[in-house]
Structures are given as structure tokens and as C-alpha cells.
Length: 145
Image (cartoon, rainbow, N blue to C red; front, side):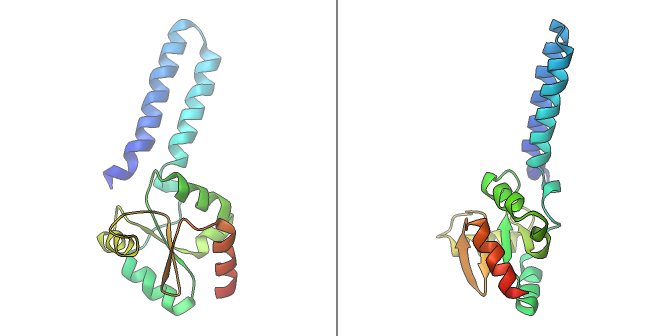
């Protein structure tokens, strides 16, 4: 769980150091803006942006019952963030599995990607799709509804 927060904390720490240096130089306004930007970057790369993750086995069970796709992701992944943002509110309808928190999820991703943990990996009807277009994922979600 700690690994998921390393990148967001680095953004906030670096932003704080840069802002402190600017405050000492007398650029308080610029320091505040930069600190806000770094905090925003930290927030976007944190697990807080993503819907609540569940385990891989539970996600597979739910997907079999309702037909919705399963998304395997990890914090700090720019492609996962792109998928999450482009899906908007519909992202909450998917089953999200954080591979850093769930060893079974990481194993499922490695099995689908030649032993690589390439994310996002979206599983629809038992077939894996690596880094699919968000419009395609929305279409798959519409089909399951």
C-alpha cells in the first residue's frame, strides 16, 4: 500500500521545496501557484482518483454476473489515469483491480501479457485488452448494460 503513495508524496514534497525557495526569494504568489500545481499532480497520481478497488477474484465473479469489464491498474500509471479521466462518471461502473494491492490481480495481468505487468489491462468476456481506447471501453460498458 505504501508504494502507491510514493509518487504523490514526491510531487507534494518537491512542490513544497520549490515553493519554500520561492517564498525566501519573495515570490509568494508564484510559490502558491506552483505548490497548488504540484499538489494537483500528486492528487491525480494517487489512488484517490480511482474508484474503490476490489480483489481480482471478486472482480471476476462480479463481471461474470453483470457482464461489466474488469480493469487492472496501478497508481502512477499515466495510461490508467488517462483511461479513468476519459471514462468520466462511467468509470465507477467498471470493476477496478489495483495490481499493487492484489497479488492475484498482478498474476492475472502477467498471465495475459507475457509475464509483464502492463496496465491498464481490461478484461471483457474473458479476453484481455492492453491499454484499450477509452471510447472502446465505454462501448463495451454500454453493451453490458
